[in-house]
View (cartoon, rainbow, N blue to C red):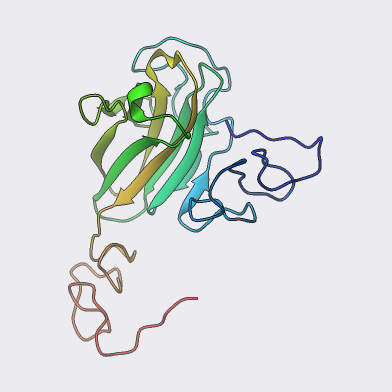
Length: 231
């Protein structure tokens, strides 16, 4: 949970999200470049969780399954459909986090998922975290545990069918301890023709198969015809 309060005047850098702040790293945190700017605004490509994003009743137990998932929870954070770094906390004990990932294209998409402990002075060796991928009925589609011996942060890759939402559940084993600060990174593999510019692509006009001489080549590279740059 990201702490919030309205009882004091907003002060960027005190670790409490207040007023118009979108984030607040707290004392000693980098002044920007870590997802939260020096003015306590969320930087592009980052997201800071909003609680509650579970069933709202933290309780311990449940092993690697946890106990806060009861189907397509309306308070899951998201829907995420592009590369993003999610900043979150598992706090208090018993808290679990749920994020909705959406494939809004007509093709299968591949995603890399990774959890990392970002609390100063703490590492993945000290927190046994799990990442479950579930469908809207709560069925486990994939489960990721230790990424390496002694590294208890999960890393994995999933495929998401066209026009489908899946739910990413992050928890500490049996919800037995709080995780003060972690990130969940979602990275989609570039897929030419899906309408989103990712990876090495310089354009993507949603044509499958893509055609040449329309400004965007079959390999999703800008042709000699001028292509608009936004904003």
